[in-house]
Image (cartoon, rainbow, N blue to C red; front, top):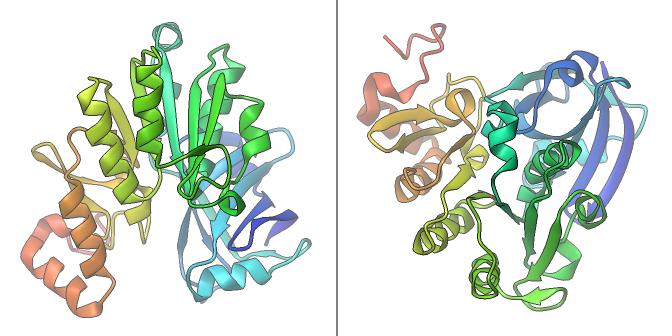
Length: 295
């Protein structure tokens, strides 16, 4: 049992939990994720690691209630727990694994859309702890859906909040803020955009205009988290990749967003899943070696 030590509702549909998971906390890095199951028959839910405390053996997850499983998670209280917490999974952010002296030379912009604020936060925090202050744009539909503002303000070099309806911070999409910052004279060597697929797609289209290399996180398309189901198969440049084992972060210029979003829609139905498996053959799975889909 992985005990819930803290629970906090961030907004009506999003909540935060601190969970006791010493082994995950010991080895995880910003950019990685884990798989959670409420009970032995529960759905496997991939979740980004929002924060971690190695000494306390704690990890922080942020969850949005979408279906039955996440609704059941929201009903759990402090002192209760999860049957399984598996991780860390996926690859850490390149900012963590690259030469720190080279990273320090870069002017970095993070763009977080909605729940994407959760995976952005640990990367910005890690950079801040290593003496690197990055600019951060946090976007949400309305003021009530802005999350982790206080936490982010403590680690960001400059924090820009924007809402689609103009109810808080700047008014408009995150792409407008990118354009405004560049117009104000800001120069960036790298952008990291994490959020809904459509948001990341248009962030990339915007940063391309200014020749800003952009990293995106394809965690929205993960289902199984181990490469077995084939849900997170995507085309990156001329290669087939799987978000859960090769990512979740990729070069945004090379990601085929239209294909990925189309697959997401198809994968939501059994017939669509079967069609994708038939069309994609042996490349449908991530080569897990267990399910036979890679043979």
